[in-house]
Image 1 (cartoon, rainbow, N blue to C red):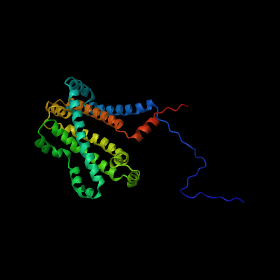
Image 2 (cartoon, one colour):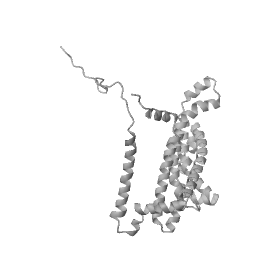
Image 3 (spheres, rainbow, N blue to C red):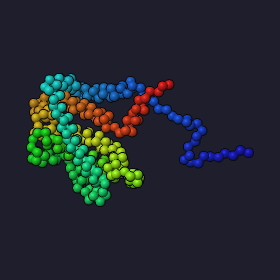
Image 4 (cartoon, rainbow, N blue to C red):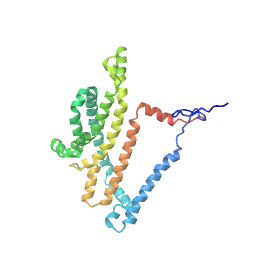
Length: 286
């Protein structure tokens, strides 16, 4: 006599499960081909919209890919690379200020629960105010030039850094600090060996987010009393009715922003992410 026993619900069957599943990275040609195909589709849609669907409108034709290439040659000849360098400098300067302030305030707030509850309403209020709303205040307080633009970038990018630092400090396991203290570690050694490794991934994640937000805010901020930068170039092209140069400048801004994001993702990787990348690129000897 045979009996049939059903496996309980929720227990996976091990009848034909492989012991290990090997994953291999996608071929290099596929990794490069898919983004290239996406760009090609986007350019095709752009051409269809400006040269086919709305070709009867003269103003729309100024934003076509063909006119954009003409504008790109013109702005390169006019020194757009110098303006791009000014924009990147302001971005990095604002990020440096935001990192110092955000990490310091975030570590202080994350270390004291009572302080966090006390300052939460004020911090949330300031965070929800558009950074460009502070533009008149920045110009009045700091004058015109680089300083108000850097201040606006810092006011924008400080919040993700501050929030990620506070969350990281608050999430540190107290037991790890107790073990380090029991082993005779000083306060500075506990911060270096327990707090910093636990907080670093969150801070790097907040910094990567801050870079993207800062680049988006930088361009309109450069329309406030400066005579250089990509935002100033867009305002200047608009005043000259050179609409094809505006599209070219948008192309430059997007390309530089994409490159900045790639560099940030590579440079701000955590040790675990670096280890995972090295394993993913390792060639299987078989």
